[in-house]
Image 1 (tube, one colour):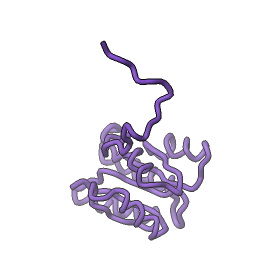
Image 2: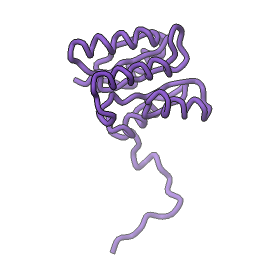
Image 3: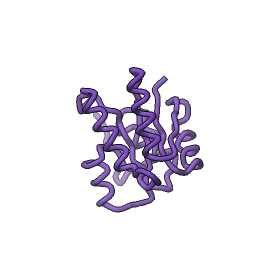
Length: 151
């Protein structure tokens, strides 16, 4: 089963993330960025990988930005090509463009989800990374125009 590294200083937030992921991933948990780096390094030393990282930004000891940047440096040091690096979703209560841009361009995240989040929102982010089926169904959309007819 794919493995996920769940990083948040709130035990309750980690619980919510794990519940949202359901049985899609086997989770490992870290309460701060330093623990996340240690878990990531230990996995790499054992020849293991994570298939997903879900990381909070605001944490004690080491921020999510700095922890993910450290993970990206580890991947570079290990010779992992950019397209093969672990997909990362940053979570934050900070809903501002500066943090979103920093998460993507400086830290190396592929998706950004603001708190509070719903399981559907997190799964939509995973779907955009090809890690889950899209949780939206045709019933979730109200078309602005009638559907096209095919003759």
